[in-house]
Length: 247
Image (cartoon, rainbow, N blue to C red; front, side, top):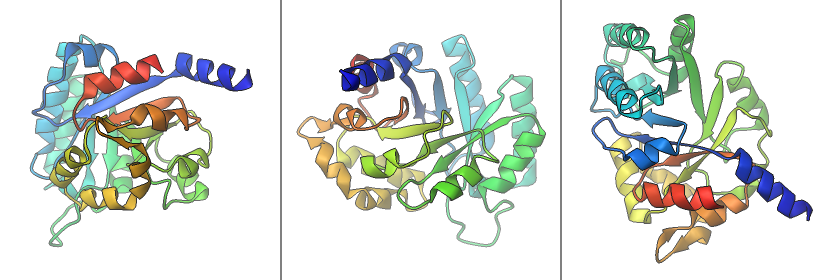
């Protein structure tokens, strides 16, 4: 009975967000069933492309659901960040997800880490979220991050024990892949740079959730005590939202 109450309460509290690349289309169904859509800042894109994609998405949604990624080491100049901030203020984009971004090949990056960017954006009254790594960061390290950032999303961790050992905070959202094949995840993470595709091999416990129909995200979520989830959009997004909403 206690277990049933826990799952029923979790279902009522469940909130979903997702993401897309600047050029990627997202359906009305997906927009209507998530509270936020993060727009990914790829190494090949200027921040203004991300900002304009957010504005277009907000117009499609009829509300401010778009949240731009800001990848520190992907930024080519201070002017690029300044133009981004001006545009966000003009379009009432008041939140961002700040990450480190691609590893620099040369010492030409104007910004090296997420903290530098977070401080600048916070000074401009833009809320900042971050990524956290349950499999490698301690509770103290995560809580220290949350002294700077407003919310956190776990980065491709498919180990329920590591996730459930996180401090049970409202500000922590659990990142889960959409119900696609491992090959789909590999292609997407390779596009993101920073050797992101290597996370697949670090997350060998994801094998426990593989099926002929793709990753059993619903099975994974049942083992997690949190109720806020961010869906990494590797394909089959609508199917993933449908299944998680019915859990």
